[in-house]
Image (tube, rainbow, N blue to C red; front, top):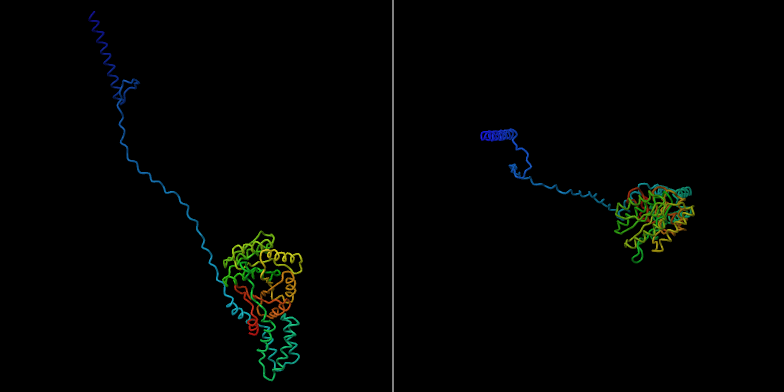
Length: 383
């Protein structure tokens, strides 16, 4: 019985050893232990590789918006002083003195007969001096040359003196560009289409700046957008601001606003550019009168300048008369007065209106506008 017992125990031991050897072999081949969910089994911890030092994180600089490029402010032009303009414009006039040469040629004849005096009258009438001034000048020349004949008078000297008297040096040609007290001077510029009115306003602004006066321009020609832009260009060149309104708006409203701003800012002079209009269009002329009345609700208009094209001759006199009746013209600006045979319009228009020529323009240059001087004008005509 004991032998069987020993045999069973031996078989059991051999079986256990066999099973243990089989499991060990499996572990060695696979390199891992068989899975066991029992909490009593301790597993060998896996070694974690040493942590490497992380490279510092460099934050990118915040993007900064580049400063916008600021365009350099346009340099302002320095207008020419009126005094130096007179010298230059006199030279310009003297370059084309057909009237003066013709008169001197006639007076230099050996014999001043009736044919000579008739030729002189024709020359003066062709120069748009007008009938009455022509007859007056010829009569005075005949008298002086006859009375002073024994003294061998200098025809040039006599002609110069009589022409200056005819142009009338006693007229007050000063521009009224200052107001009473703190009020600005208000200059209203009027005229028909094509006379150079807007250009004259721009050139007048340059004269004011040259005299170290502050100015404000009013673009009251609201029917023509090009006129407003043209005026703005003139103002930008010398640092003078332009008050404008909506295209097709009320011109009187623009003029009113400009004068109001001029008073608030304390500027010296406000210059109002008006729309060109035909003298035979009553509605347009009535509107011009309205512009003047609206302005004067705030401040008096100190100067009303009528711009005339010197080459229009007698038609310019008709224009002058109608405008004067509507807005009480106080001064004439003659453009395109190049010393040609039409220079006599200076005398005729003054006689027609009883107001002086105050400014003359003789070219396209920005400073080709100058105060009118009777003696300088005559001297230029005579060369």
